[in-house]
Image (cartoon, rainbow, N blue to C red; front, side, top):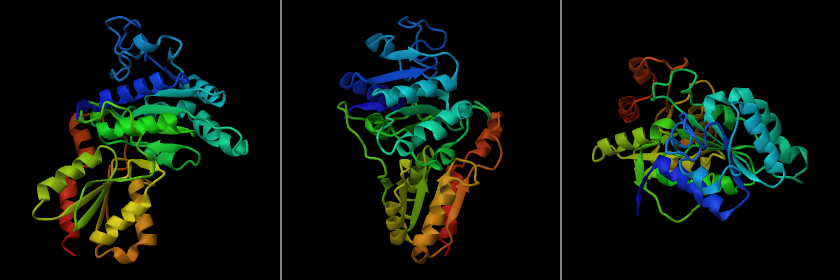
Length: 335
């Protein structure tokens, strides 16, 4: 199977869906040019991270639409286009900028199907980068999926691998409801096996990335890689099962509960700030629906309740680490 980067997987998913369906369009800042490049020129990167490179050349200005620097305009236009039968994929360069266009997301697009009695759908995708580890400081590094997950009417996707990135993005573009698709910027260069042909991964189906008998680690986004590292390191000593939910809304609580019933121990790792994050939600669900499964208190690992530091040495301390995860595994195994 071909090996591709996370960046290439995202690009391929969009390209293949645009080839398949003429109603799929792209909107965003610098998505045709990027880094000062002129659309169609050698200097064009296809957004700040080079994710959309080549799509303008293939599909032209009518389907790859460079927008003004106005997040409200981007998301408002995407929501309107979706209501009229298009399938827009709108990009927020950094998902941190959602505050500028939040009304268009949670008060409009998320509610259209409900407010209009199911007579309309809003098939739109909002892509954006998330996460720390890039040295981009507090306004460009946040893990914001708990905020989006709280809102009914939108689906929230958080892939951790190139394979999942392609399959989940294809599913997102084909979905008839608004989807928030979150790309951790540190994962763009991560490589893995990705089929050339299109495929879709259903929402709400978690992936068990490591099978184990002693401890369940539920991890989100980049933290899945850290959890896998710990599981591999401890193999032969402690048997660790790693569950990647892949989507936070819908959240596959069934797989999580089945894993905890099997292992009896739970650690949840979430890069988001600790108040009301997905780690809290998972632990709450297990406490309500599977308390009898646990032989040890669950452990929650999150970033501190502070903005992301700008200094690289402080940012490293801010992000949950494999060492923290390993320490937690050893702690729950003491019971």
